[in-house]
Every structure is written in structure tokens, then in C-alpha cells.
Image (cartoon, rainbow, N blue to C red; front, side):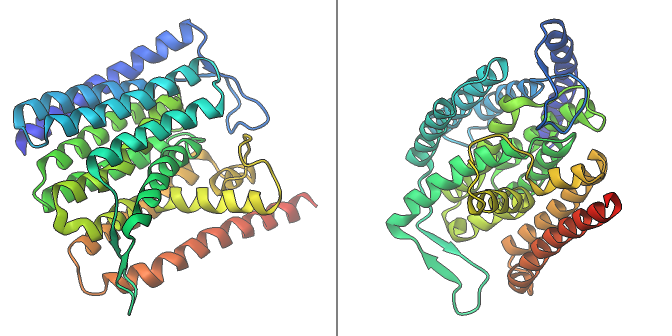
Length: 351
């Protein structure tokens, strides 16, 4: 454990300096995010800082896995190949916009690679009375595929204001580091800590007001990795297969809820859901006058609550099922109601 923590300190140092270097390089080469009508910022800002997250995480993970042998070489290389593929195509998208079909094909390949090695959910345990276990059987294959592709894109969609995606990555990485310790899976602990450390190094430069943006290269990589972590838990610890999905879902629930609600809301209104927009709940809070810092802190607080629920669910603490079943939908409703109220208040002030 001390070895992993020591490596994580090096990851933090290298990520921090790496993002600083990328900031200088991107500014010099005019790789800038230029504000437009869909932006939540007002000044041209260098992008691509997530490249440091990708590089430091994967380099140290490969080095650690080579020494520890905590995951088979084939499984490790498969994850690395999928993550690098998605990061590479996303980096090209940062440099010059690529067709959405190209990105989707890449995400599909990454999902197929992951399912090939780590398998898919054949059953999921839910905290529902009289319905505690749900057998997916062959339906688990498309379900797992949609989980990987969906979360990869959802994380990218939620990277729209300063500090949000980076802060969520720090929190989720630490959550998985603890889950790895509780499940006696040092590989999960190492990957979680490396993600948290590299994202914290980036966050030093991205906390409001941001001096560099993560870019698709970082957000897609993080979404893909967080989608695979519960599958890795299932793969390494089969007895936790049923619990693994909710453990992966709960720390990220604000991102997943916001993305799902926004997608369905735009679909109901007949909008082109593939076109850029500013309809996410977090974006709507910024539009009515909330600062990037306050919205980011709100979402991180909600994510922290999800992490506590994930620990309780993993340890099967008394009352955890009720808290998830009743509490999480209530919090989702409260978040939605808060956004609606703030928009009504803003409209009254302008009237």
C-alpha cells in the first residue's frame, strides 16, 4: 500500500508539471477553446490538459502492474489498448473536430475489447424489496455495451464548466481506491489512486477560474475507465459481481442523472440530440447566474454522497438498501426542482 501511495505522489507531481507544460504548448500553438453561443466561458482557453491524465495514469499503471502481477498481462494490455484508442481519437477531435460517427465507432471498438476480456453483467443485485436480484442473462451483453459507450460519452458531455470533470475524477478515483482495499484487489486501488492523483494535478490548473481545459482526450478516457472499473471488480472478484454495477454507478450518479434527464428532455422536445447545446442541468444553473465554483461544489457534494452509499452497499450495512432505494430518487428530484426554481426566479427578476 505504501508503494502505491508513493507512486501516486509521483503521478501527482508529474501530472501537475505536465499540465503546466501542455498549457504553454497549447497556447503557443493556438490550440484554444474559442467561446461561442454554446460555451460556458468567455475567454479563449487552451485545451488538451487531459493528455497529462492519460499519460501519467497509464505509464505508472503499466509500471506497477509489471512489478505486482496483480492483473494478467493480457487483461492489462486490453484495457490499455482500449483506453489509448479512445484517448487518441479524442485528441484528434480536440485538434480538429471529427465526425460523431468516427468517435462512436471508436467507442464501440473500446467497448467490445472490454467485454471480450472482462465479460458482461449476467445478474445485478438491486436494493429493492422483493426484487433484490435481477438476472440479465444474454441481455447483459447489450446492457454492458450501452453502459460503457454511454458513460464514455456522458463524462465528455459533463465536462462543460471549470473543475467539474476533474473534481469528479478525483472523488471517483479515491472511491475506487478504497473499494480496491476493501475487496483486497490492489490493482483497483492502484488504478483508482493514479486516476485521483493525475486528475488532482490537472485540477490545480482547472479549478475556477480555469487556465486550461481537459478536452475530449481526458474526459473520454476517464469515462471509459470509470465504466470499466466495476467490470474489473466483477472480473477479479466474482463474488462481488452482483454488487459491482451499483458500486460503479453511485459515485457518478450526478453525471449519469444529468445526462440521462437532458437526453430524454431534448428527445421529448424533438431536438437533434447529437447537436451541441447548453441544456444540461449544471449548464442551466450557470446560465441563471450561479458561478462555476458553486455549481461544481454542488455536484461534487452530491457525488460524495453517492460514494458513501457505494461503501455502504459494498459492506452491506444495515439500511443501505433503503437509503439507495428511497434516498437517491428523492435527491434527483430535489436537484431537478432546484434548477426549475432557480430558472423561475431568474425569469421573474428579468420580467
